[in-house]
Length: 256
Ligand code: NAP
Image (cartoon, rainbow, N blue to C red):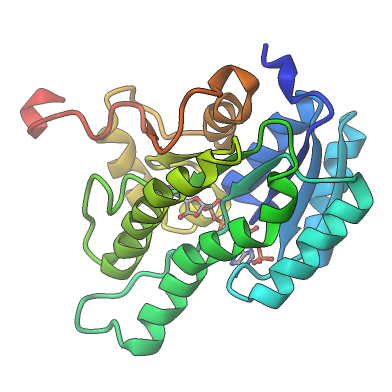
């Protein structure tokens, strides 16, 4: 399935762990040459090494998505190493919890700069090579939180994830001229190292709120991303794909 990914060069930001690692795994298993990015070069390379050990092609790169110079340098290095960039998965993100009273300017800026501005910088840095690609693809990892739902403690995070979608819809129009598509995957609660740290009570309560009665896996998000990265998804742009096990469907607890 999705053999069109074979040999494509795929940048995945925030791929040293969590959802990004799941995306990198699925793309590598389908023959993509994966550029694993994270601020920690060692962690990015460790993930790339694991992908290579499993039979894939991958290399680690240090990149901070909130820093345009850093992203430009990383994109240039990928293009030099692999001859171009075909697929960009703007996945890196942070989700510190803070109440409305606690969110000050620096806290707001950190989340918006990483999650929303980071998506912009990731696309901008890779754009020279995406334009040359046969069928350029951008996939954003947004969230149900913000675009669809709310959750106390994440007002700044929710704003950043909704901002990604506003960015995407206008970017889709500008990128279409170059034959590039841009879409967003909106995960529900996905079992990552980060989510694990929220504790057993949180995980149990979240699982109960999902009609399919399990949390998402990082590979669930990887599969959705793979589809949007494929040639088969070439007529889809500016769209969102919710991957949440039905979590956003019930009108009330009685409907669960
Ligand atoms: P995670 O496990 O905390 O991993 C975050 C990744 O991003 C790491 O590789 C981290 O590596 C990297 N990163 C953090 N800040 C960065 C920066 N400034 N520049 C470059 N890389 C950076 O996170 P996750 O749960 O997998 O979340 C990944 C994405 O999915 C985020 O956009 C998040 O909003 C979204 N999401 C997650 C869930 C969920 O349930 N987990 C649900 C909905 C949406 P370094 O620290 O080395 O940079």
